[in-house]
Image (tube, rainbow, N blue to C red; front, side, top):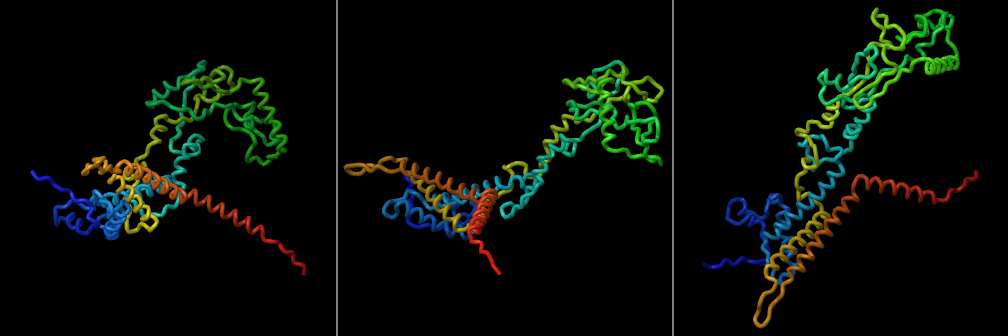
Amino acid sequence: MASTVIPIWPGSASFATVSASYYGTGTWPPPTPFGFYDNDPEFKTDANKVSNFCALHLGYPIENIELQEINFFAAFEEAVTVYGNELYAFQLRDNYLSLEGASDRIDVNNSIFTPTMATIVRLSQQYGEEAGAGGNVTWFKGQLALTPGVQTYDLSKWADDLGIVGGIEVKNVWYQPPPAINQLYAPTLMTGQGGLGGVPPLGFYGFGYGYANYLMMPTSFTMQNLQAIEMQNTVTLSNYTFNIVNNFISVFPVPGTGMGGDDFDGGDDLGYGEFLVFDFIKIQDRIDAAFADGTNKISNTSNAPYLNPTYSKINSIGRSWIFEYTLAKAKEMLGLTRNKYSSVPIPGAEVTLNGDGLVSAAATEKEALITRLREYFDQTSRQALLERRAAESAARVQEINQVPMTIFIG
């Protein structure tokens, strides 16, 4: 069986010929492994040029280059793709706060991003939720029936009885004494501070709104009275308070034992209201609020709809980097090829090939090119540009301050 001789680099390349067979007119392999840019006229033209560029830098025609044109084309395609990946990875990092939650059908490759507060506001809703001033978790009001003589109540059982799964988180308990302003009372309407009599622990009384003989007292006088009432209640009355430990809430004083007042319903006196009212959220709602429907939306960096770049739109700065990376990749390919035969016997001696040196040099060059490209992109980030603008502004002011300030004498 005759062996097949694989031709090496002949000195020129023809992407058009290979492309013709790729479109069904021959049996030659496709010009590039993936065909990302095969329809771009400028890519086709540069493919031939960059092949010659790489071959000359690798020693042709003094040395044979054990590669074919499709090897150079593959390296060229990879270089363009790596350039696009680095570019759009940078763009994604710089704009992800504006991208997250947007439609995954937008043309991000050709979009100019204007930063918005939408995602930042969404991320901040949790703070409004904790403060009871918005957010994305609903606050509910609960009523826990107070029983005379019973001080401690099981909130878990209360939630289970209502069919609440996952437990609750109490945000606020409306178990406070009547405000001192509601207890400010005088037996005469002379002050305009009327009420139902006594020191009422229920309802909102006082101040005689609407009375013709309303008399406004000095604010300092009113404040002193309020402070006196609060101190009097603290010292002589049972203080209204509560304590929550684990799932149990204890109220003080014990309902029906010294809370005073009358609920005016004709039944047993339970003190300040027959129910303990509190605000709460469902813990499961908090967990569910962390997730939103991401159908047809950008939900993570993997589904941001960036595509491969359009080669014909890449400027000379980008193409220069691509040519250098193609050369490094071709050098790596050639080194791996030569490593298959570390030495070649010749009459009376042998020739040692430089495969290891080529592979090592290619790895160093590729790493340096990637580092240089990332540093270049970082220098054009939104943050870096704003910092540079601020530095320019400060330098401009400093320079202007050096201009002598002349004194005009008229």
